[in-house]
Length: 198
Image 1 (cartoon, rainbow, N blue to C red):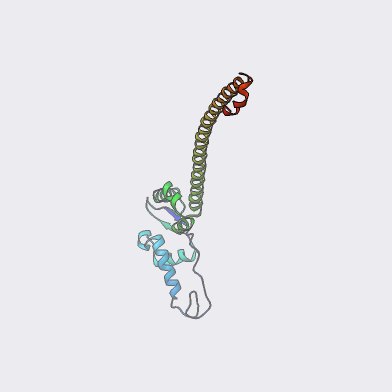
Image 2: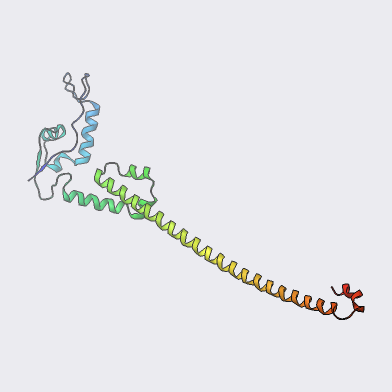
């Protein structure tokens, strides 16, 4: 036998006539019926848990624990339930799904999930996002580095070409200077026509 303690808060009470918890009218209010239906969906039918209507009412009011027979019965928060819930959430939220999902969408899908599990999934999403940002930064930095290395190689080749061009022009200048000096020193009469060779 296992003891189940219900974590569902007791039904709210109001003092107006015909409302939930009212002592003036024995008829249950609409809100109380809705609350009972919701609890039945969460816990399963009373017959499946082996509960009588009185035990279900006590469970709802949180007045006494309810005993459940059977080898498969477990209480909320047990290792079996936590493990099953963890496996279901792991299937629902793969790493790719967590990264692509917005925070709002994740919060919407985590409604009804345990607080610890929700925090774990949110932390997992943040870790994956940060990992993705770091990888993107590394890729961008590597791409920039390769681009800068290619630019440096191109500029070094251009510099070598310009140095070769400067050396060629210096040789050509020296050749013209030597020719000019020869013409200037070739004779006194030829000085009148020296400007034609410059």
